[in-house]
Figure 1 (cartoon, rainbow, N blue to C red):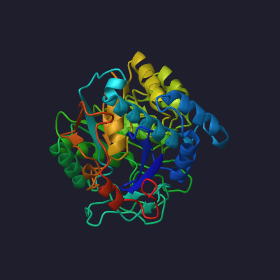
Figure 2 (figure 1 turned 45 degrees about the vertical axis):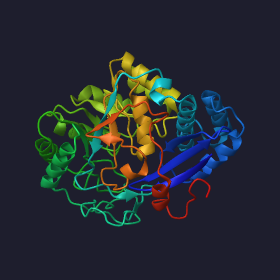
Figure 3 (figure 1 turned 45 degrees about the horizontal axis):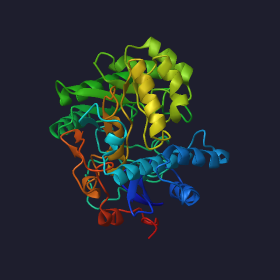
Length: 409
């Protein structure tokens, strides 16, 4: 087992697992500090295991990492990428697409929604959400302004003022590219807390949120669905004010209004607002999702397959949500390897709504793999083995994060 880290809008950590037969499986882990080292340590432990024993290997690794915190935290980022690579490897060994190995598809084409940030393109962020120069040489001048070296949630880290016309243009551009579902951030300058440690939105700022939502809806036009992201930045009162600012629109969901550990608050907020709530990207495993699913708190659950803990956990979450009439829309900031994997798994869920695409501004997203992936807002399921794509090594090497090894080399 080995890894490569591609520097993009985030770090895309690709996992490579080779079997004794020479077959190779590919996975991707959600970014984290020290992630390649964690994956390397796990890889050494499972050399010689039977790659078909995906669940057995997962159990071994969870037990081995129990002292390091395998009930949660970044250990699961590593586990998820390894699990995905094992599933891909087994599907390739059998010569079948992953969706076939998982029982077949409810969706022959997976709907993708475009994450549009706050209008300008998303800046490039390191493993601690630290703002860094964009890695590509010629980048869009519309990349959001930010203070290099600061963490995204630091006060004043984002410096780009909100431009309503830019929001509308961004929505129109995404729709013109074929997307019929979009997500925009509402935790932007003018709406984020301005006091250290505070989660309280500035007085009267909900009017800006309403103006933003209306500009986006106008730019997107009819027949396009919208979601809005709050990135767990707010307290109860502020979250309620923001929900009220957008509940006049038929939105898909309002995402992560409260910190993920505030389950009781989330349940109360769902009862107090008309806006459907979505969330779950920071939750690990089915047990963390169970309270918000069983109570119907989240209309849309958004696990991230790069850190939720593996396919088995994701399928339990999706099935429980389906039983209660809830939709599932995986959070996904991955590169094309992680995106292809998430699409294969999502295609097997009857209650699947849409899969996130967070790399509109990365010019080499499509070049990183050997086959077209997102076309006109859809990822089509094919009969190619495994996740349906393989990385293009020269592109991986070109955009590898400085100071990291490319699959052991």
